[in-house]
Amino acid sequence: MLLFNLTATKYTDVMTSAQQIDKARLMRLATYASVSTAVVLILVKVVAWLITDSVSILATLVDSSLDVLASLLNMIAIRHALVPADREHRFGHGKAEALAGMGQSLFIAGSAGILLLQAFGRILHPQPIQAGLEVGVSVMIFSIVLTMILMLFQNYVIKHTDSTAIKADALHYKTDLLVNASVIVALVLTFYGWQQFDALFALAIAVFILYSAWHIIRESIDLLMDHELPDADKQKISAAVIAHPETQGFHDLRTRRSGTTVFIQLHLELDATLSLYDAHAITDRVEQKLVELFPDVEVLIHEDPVEIQQ
Figure (tube, rainbow, N blue to C red):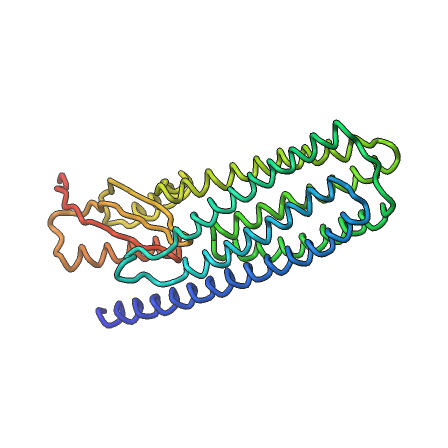
């Protein structure tokens, strides 16, 4: 029986290690895809802006430029976050993702401020769209298609890694879809005489960018401040712990997330008459249930003896 348990534990460790390697590969691929997409979009939007002189296209160009910076930050941060724990960083380097999120938010907020000034100036002094409406619309449609392809891959990576940095990156591109669609409308309306719509849409885009920045800041702060896991996750943990027939309950549950790693600590209440061997075996089985819920998890369980009333 002991040999079986040791074999099962080794098998689980191998599977966990393989899952972590696969997560790392997916996260790196996602950052490469994000940077490449942003560079392509910048090139085509520069051409469209030079041809049309549209401030709403300029808005998307600024946004794409920031996407490159944000994606480069993500790539650097994820490479650092995936470095295994060492003597100076016993809990790993996962918080590098949260720091990258904070850096992204600063870039985003700064670009939104510049864009607001451009939009207000164009509202006060409207200018007609230059020749090249077809070019502007074509570039926006191309941007939408390319962004959707990237987002499909990002969503796949998020589903398998739950990476905060990839979530932040995906949020940029989700807003880009709405931005690019609104620019098409703005270009058409402005071309046919509604000149202020170009600036009004740019203004709306800037406000939306600021909202996105605040969302990233809030999530990054939660990670840096060791915010508890969502209530739904804690309910899953509770159900997994009390599901074992020999557990008498638990208390002092503490949870947090660092990068893709989840940390769980709790005091497990067990029958005081159990032997140390049996208590340890029960704790191992409870820990295994938690690993099944969160494959990239570190669990610390303190065993508390309780008297059972007969």
